[in-house]
Amino acid sequence: MDFTRGRVKLYMQIKVMTFNIQHGRDFIKRDINLPMMADVIRNQQADIIGLNEVRGKGAHVDYQEQAQIIGEDLGFYYYFGKAIDLPQGPYGNALVSRFPLTEMETILIPDPEIKDEKVLCYETRCIIKAKIVELNLTVLISHFGLAQSEQRNATRTLIEELKKIEGPCIFMGDLNMTPEDEKIKQIEEYLTDVSVKLKGNKLSFPSVNPERKIDYIFGNEFIEIVRAEIPEIVASDHFPHTAIVRIKDKK
Image 1 (cartoon, rainbow, N blue to C red):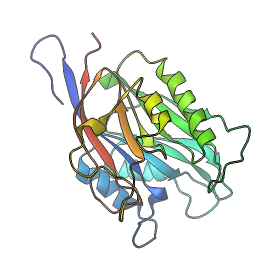
Image 2 (cartoon, rainbow, N blue to C red):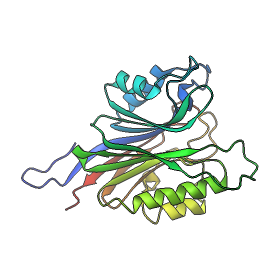
Image 3 (cartoon, helix red, strand yellow):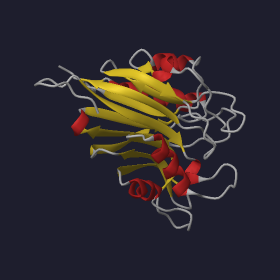
């Protein structure tokens, strides 16, 4: 973290990460390996992490409090946002943070009224919204659906939330859209994609022979992007995506 000497705090520098962990499944060995996912976060020295495809505690033995397990492994704070109840247990996203979390909420994204697109599945999605008071930062995390109609609803819901936020804000997650998508352009009317600072690998999925970028980190006008990276780490079926940012003083 960086501070000026004197009365006015100019910025704080942190590292953020978005990581679709596919419920902790090792992409090579195919078993659930939450310590591996925690090690990826630890080795990247991330401070604030958005996780997608996270399980909660359910009837099935493999449905445990994954956000809690990863958070406690790191010694971090954590919050699980349930998007849907599957027969085996709850499923959704999570926020893991070095800093205390407040005002945590799970905002459900409306399902499309008509489901007539040829996609693998339709699935209720959500947005996690939380405040990190120590940084004067609002964090949003989501995992958008596969259907165009799901993505349109998610984009509208996100923008509605962004309009309510006055100070520094970071949004991240697996959006299932490539950078050329018109809906990404709509988000960019409010936020800046950290990919403007990417110099190396620019693809995030799949983690073996990657074909496209569908994982994102965005910041608003109070976020200065220092560096961005998509490390080629094969743990989940997605590469993690990281960024070092400075949080500007709203004043």
